[in-house]
Image (cartoon, rainbow, N blue to C red; front, side, top):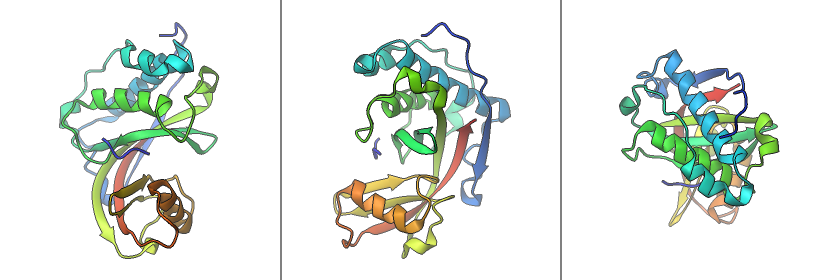
Length: 212
């Protein structure tokens, strides 16, 4: 996971729900229910345009130039880091985003991160058109990031983890790990650290939109 920073077919029926921690509750307050739905629908349209209109080998170029209609919402009011995660069979299929706001329009960020999650996550091959029906899109809005002294202070179901040591870092978002012990083990692996190396731990509060 990076610390950064059209097919003519009937669109799938898209449902959504969102979950909030108390610390992240205000992140999505600028968006009403209809606008939240449009955020997810836009992400789906970008994913479809990226994957369906070209082969995997050309997915980056296709996604960059994909023609999608940007919804008119109060996107300027959103000021947070964003991650887009593609989930298939309860496993992460691709993920890309940034912990901190980069000053861009909400939809410009979502477009870039959907394309990158589908084509540029080094842990996974590019998403294939045959997989689209099985992929669920998750958009995480990053709230407070606070240091913790022990991994037991983080609930992997509701809290993200930022792990840092020197120039090494990794992020796991809520739901990527089932247990705290696996969460820290996997974060160290992704950061290129040995299991016994010390690292700084941070709890990440998020507000999340899930496609269903």
